[in-house]
Length: 212
Image (tube, rainbow, N blue to C red; front, side, top):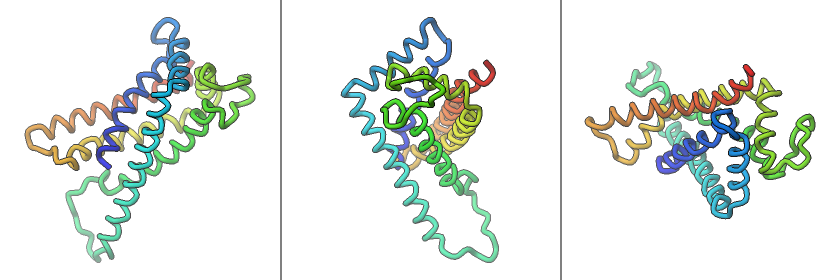
């Protein structure tokens, strides 16, 4: 569970870096983004990595659900008087933020990734006849520019993901036994900064198109 989570944490940084090229951060940013999308869609090594990535998602999700069910079973019947523990709010309800993220992933794959693979047709209004890697930039821009609801859901999802990451980043290191009074505060600080960067970084893209 922890290793799969750390693997996905690294992936999110790569994904964010690529996504930022949707914005006019440099000259020919759209061509750079399309070139990256084309490379990732045609390179055999990257395609193999996508399988590993999907496996990472599945392992993390399945183990998360299994562990939560085990916790519920172990807890048994609740006490008549609530027991005030030191367990944080996110520790108690992390499964629910995870499920919200899972629902968003399904929507995200359907609206973007499956379109890139040609498994789902692009919106007719986008006027994209064959929506594969070379048209991926146009699809992304169209969705964020013409679908306010999707953009709002996207932003909310990454805010939830940021909250989820803020807890799970440090928890992953603790699960692996890397928990010490000297460097745990540093890990927590890095986790907080990382979760803020991810939440804001991914939200910047739809916000740019909402206000432009």
